[in-house]
Image (cartoon, rainbow, N blue to C red; front, side, top):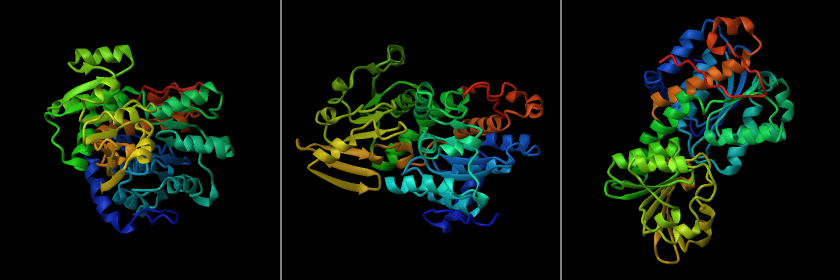
Length: 408
């Protein structure tokens, strides 16, 4: 094992042995990443790459990080969510020699500090030359505050829907300064991680947080994209009566022909007992909706950012709030009813549980590794000729890469 990273900050480095045991267990469930190591290890295609990664610091992410380093990369890491870090995973990676700045329960100020620190943690004071992002926070920071770092940067890869939307806005506004790979829209990411991953991890988060019996409850799912589909399937499978709210007519029709009632949030607010937002859009649940909800309605979000639920309204207008346990808060409204908010409106599956299963994350993360190789090797014609999966290269400032060959 390498010496512990000289630059790192985690909750408890003594958790490293526990984290290492779980990493070894996860490797057996992540065949895509392990096969990627086996296929490309001799070539060391990421030798010389300096990857700044901002993605949930979980056990599964640890296997991703060690795949990148096994292929030659130097890596620094932060989590992309203040609640999603698994402290034993962060400790294990820090103990292996990778600079990690992440712990569960960061403040916003600490989160931003971590992003800044990872940019300074490469050996010999060198700068990043690749970005691996989830949600766009690191991309935004480097573009807005440290654009000089992008001069030698080969590009970035983005993991999630919200971050991809941000990239397209940057491209439209001519603010995207490096090539980018849209990992989210690869079929082996969005059709698996977003749907089947959420199908398992949503219920895990709700059950761990509340111990509520889902069977017989009325569950309202806001949005019927891939994430919404997985959530609706999960809740229905647990015996809930599922109502879907959706503004896209095609997705709404899909929900209807899948057997779900489709209506507006204004209609559903007074009916539902469990509410899940999945849209990535702002103000899906607002004060108007909270005031109509049943007593002890459970409210949670599985979209990337905490913008879908108007948590500020709850904090401002609640008569009283009781923290039941970490990431479970019970707000008392003026009408006497209570709202149970999970993970402060952030990702419930990572805030209240451990996120997606290892196998489905292997699908997503294999795409990430291939995207990083694609960007770093875009000028290496010999390498691209040998490995046909990289044959196209990056031919434009923003390249949608959806041709990952999964070795599962």
